[in-house]
Image 1 (cartoon, protein in one colour):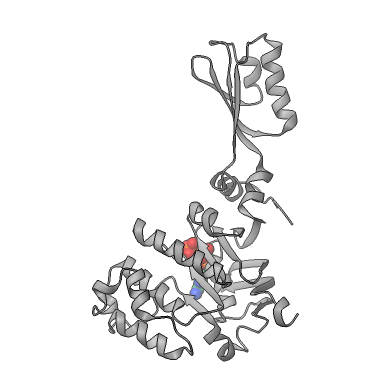
Image 2 (tube, protein in one colour; image 1 turned 90 degrees about the vertical axis):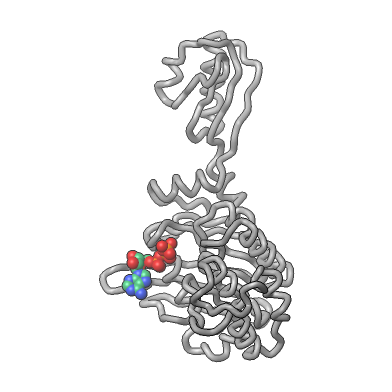
Length: 309
Ligand SMILES: Nc1ncnc2c1ncn2[C@@H]1O[C@H](COP(=O)(O)OP(=O)(O)OP(=O)(O)O)[C@@H](O)[C@H]1O
C-alpha cells in the first residue's frame, strides 16, 4: 500500500511481552486516514503497550505495525515530525516553563501552530511562566496535549488525553480533537471514559487481557448488543413467577414492569406473549438500547465476543 491508500496505522497480530507478562496478545487494528480510533480496556489491558509499538518506542515481539506506511522503529526519524505524541506522564523537561516548552517544540516544526493560540485555547496563559513540575496534574496534561499538536501532525497518539482534566478542559480537548479530525488528522487514543469514546471515536476497539474483545463503530457495538431493558405498563400487582423463571423482572411502581437482560426478537415475543397469556392489559411498551458502557462492561467481565469482524 502506498500514497493516499496508506492507512494512518496498521497493526497486524502484534504481540508485546514485558518479561513473563504478555501485555498485547495478537492484536490487529487499522486506523484509516482522517479517522479517530479509541482503544478501550481495563487497567493493564495492554492499551499503552500497543500505543508504544505504534509510536516506535519499542518493537513488537512478533507481528507488525506500519504507521503512515512506514516502520515506526526503523523509520523513526522520518516519522517523528509527522506525528503528535501525548504521553500519559508528560515526558517533557520538568524544570522548564510551560511557555518555553511549547515554543521549543514549535521550533522543531516546519509549520507550527500559533503557540499563543494553543496557550489560550488550553487555558495555559496564566501558567505560561510556571515550571512544568509546578503545574497541576491537569495543567501538565493540557501542556502535553499542546506539545503533541503544535507541529500540525498528520497522526496523533493520545494516551488517556483527558485524565485528570477538569470538565472545561475536557470539553476543550474534545473540541480540539474534533477540529483535528475535521482537518483530516488521524487520531489513535486510549481512554477509560465511555462518553469520550462515544463522542469522539469513529471506531472503537475494546481490549481485554491483551486481546481484542470487540471492534466496531460505537453504533455497531451498541446495536449488536441489542435491547437491554424493556419497560411494560400493564395491570398492577401481576404474579410474575412465570416470567421470572428466565429473566430479572421488577415491578418498579404499581403497574410498571422492568424486564432486564439481552432481548432479541424471540425474547421480546416471549415476554409480551406472557403478558397476553395472563390476560394483562398492556398500555405501553418501551425499550432501552444498550449503551457503550453496557457493552463495555459485559465484554470486560464476560467471555470474549466479536461484535464485528
Ligand atoms: N515497561 C513495562 N515493564 C514491565 N511491564 C510492563 C511495562 N509496561 C506495561 N507492563 C505490563 O503490561 C501489562 C499491560 O500494561 P499497559 O500499560 O499496556 O496497559 P493499559 O491498558 O495501558 O493500562 P492502563 O489503563 O492502566 O494504563 C500490565 O500488566 C503492565 O504491568
